[in-house]
Length: 227
Image 1 (cartoon, rainbow, N blue to C red):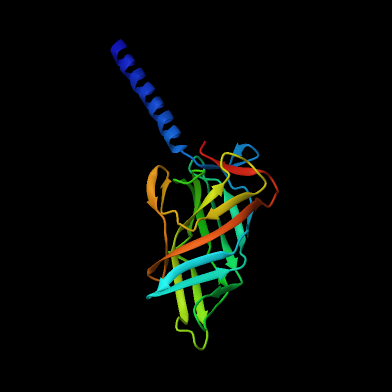
Image 2: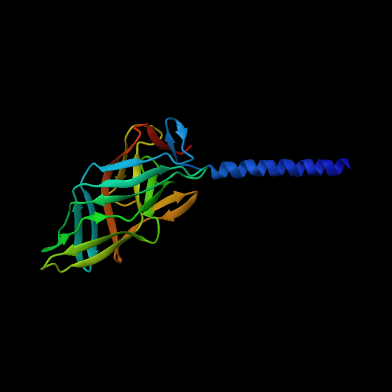
């Protein structure tokens, strides 16, 4: 009987230890923080406003294509918790004033589909990025070229995902900078797993360079941290 009780106690200790280990493993950052507390549930709207012109670069056939947009803002963006998993958020973006370097071509205003994003680790200066991807399907946005003499006239889908470095990290401010670098971030660590990141314009690789400032609608200080 004593041996049975000892064995049962040993198994119980093992189960408890395993549960603690699993809980600790699942609590791998990065996480959103607001006013010093980790966000595990939704925390309302976050507003993005571009700080620089935004550029999409790609090729159509052998023709280099550069789309430059003056400004961009978010629409219905929300900061969301994810329990003990890495932080998430969602929203869409409008780019109303854009031009393209192709002769005779104009580009219509661009509005992305609803995007979801997740915090992840990456080999960047701050080590923390936010990866944006479509909520459903693969299309980030549909881009339309028009013009009587435009050889590129038509619709092209921008698909995939794109990562922004969050500056600073491990600090809480009223405004954070989301920097999409000219040299794209192509690999991130999501929940401990290496994950590829990248955009396609039709079937060709694309680059998106921009910088956004982000503020909570409430004006509270917020930030990201690995713990």
